Length: 529
Image 1 (cartoon, rainbow, N blue to C red):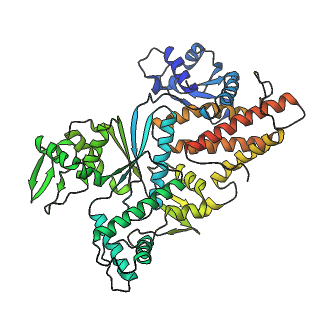
Image 2: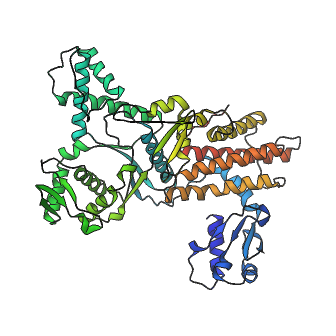
Image 3: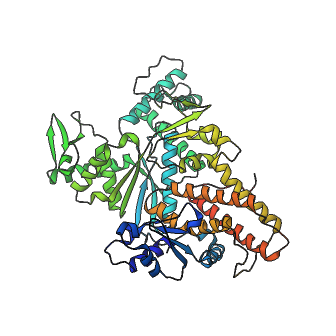
């Protein structure tokens, strides 16, 4: 149990009030003179802070005092933090793990880009978030599955086939035409060129279906390769076309008819989503008989529910915000709890280079792909920059900053901390130090570090349960900052064996936690700089 939760429990036992423990606010004071933790509960409940402070006794508390106008502040026994250093060394890569998830089955679907082009920077942000969340949830005891939904059916795939065939005609020296719906990325030209290089002009009479299948196979393979390079792997790849082949989409239509939740208007088939908090009813089959995106998406989500998942998390782009109510409504119409679905919306990313925004357009082919970004700044920098911001906010990806080999660059700063510690540990070469008590770790710089190390398990739990992986990126940066400050203020290696050994243990613990945190956001830190 975290110190905050323990303090909440202690306070709750000593107040005559129906307030929930979670509503007892525990903060870390910015001014170190005000102790390790502070609460405003006396002000909130309008009770005598001195009287309450005198009641708050526990094994973890060294001292309790009141700061005007009524904050109750705590100094925690240092033994608690010192013992945690030994716990870190014992648990190593398992430090921070927990079973709070109780093996709850969660499906996290992310990226799921139409296989009509390469992954770009928007997909990179979604890939980072989804992969980080999967790692964190599994680390704290959930059974989290990552899933990619392949949109390999529908009109966009026909447009892919048309685009490749027209480019193939160009390769054959014939006239060609790309309409507004065609894809104009360089990868489309490359696919057409490959077909021509292998078959010359012998494929001119092939149908659009042939070019569509060629494009799908090549682009999907490339997407998988790019994701793997980015350290993102998926447990499951689900094909939209297979949903049709298995009859799951038609089955949804039958179920909706049986429930009398659809009607015909203007020769189209509509779903009665306004009965379930949507702002308007939604078309699922258009007047020309083609299906809207919503219908196979309903089938897909019901398919996931039937596979036994207790929670579905979708990571979607900013243009999908209006999709939330209609999809939840459909789930409820079909007899399931709509709250099983949690849709996370990714805000836009601007790429900044030389202090200017780079304008992008997938349709015209003017994009920065995930591979381009990784080639330019590396996997670690790309993942950290995307990991460091909440997906709820727009972000600027500063490529110049990501390339800087200085402390201004947060990932450089973190990796430098890891490399510094690694270098020191190599020099002393002491791996089996047996310490049971700590007598010299008494500076404020060290105390800040050991408090931060203690907070790691609770930070991981918050990052997972609140679905906010950026908390891990923030945490590891703050830990690196505390280490660098300590490194510049105090000697680490001296002739005093006890002094040195205790600091070696401290550095080993810091390194373990830095590496554990970075692993949760898909970063492999450098050992040398």
